[in-house]
Length: 205
Image 1 (cartoon, helix red, strand yellow):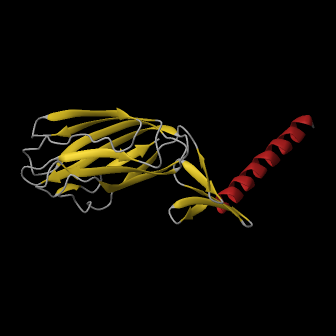
Image 2 (cartoon, helix red, strand yellow):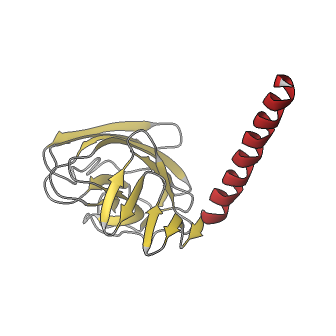
Image 3 (cartoon, rainbow, N blue to C red):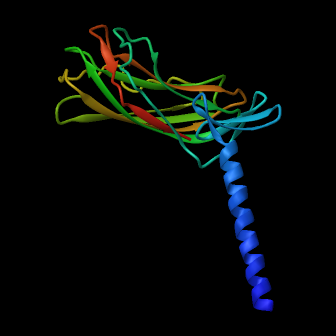
């Protein structure tokens, strides 16, 4: 009798768990590129590494989101930094690591400059890039400080005009201002265009 009762209880619990799981899955679904669960007038919008509730952002350290270009950037023919199209939300006082694979082309005599930009004043940003300068060589560039947009490569040109690669990484300690973290680029001179190509991607944090 006890064995039968135990079997009934276990079966009932399994059935309840299945119904609950189906109910929860039915509530979750993609909404405008985010995962959303609704409860009356309440909604929780979650990209890969943070959620927003009524305008407040909740971040989940340790979970990385990816941003990937699905089209080429507009390109740069000057040394002025512009946004590449790769970006992430960043919370006040958030710390994290940015890792990127950047594919690019440049006109003859041009080259790639990279930088990381964000909101307000950061506590610290330490960045490093390995940028192709020939068919077989890459150059390392580093930057560290308490301001955004420290440029990585301002003068070294590339002898290649076909598809090349660069790697960008950064340790980021944001200040008290929330906003958007942007990967930026420029040409090393005015011989452009230097173009960040589609399928370039980054992860953060």
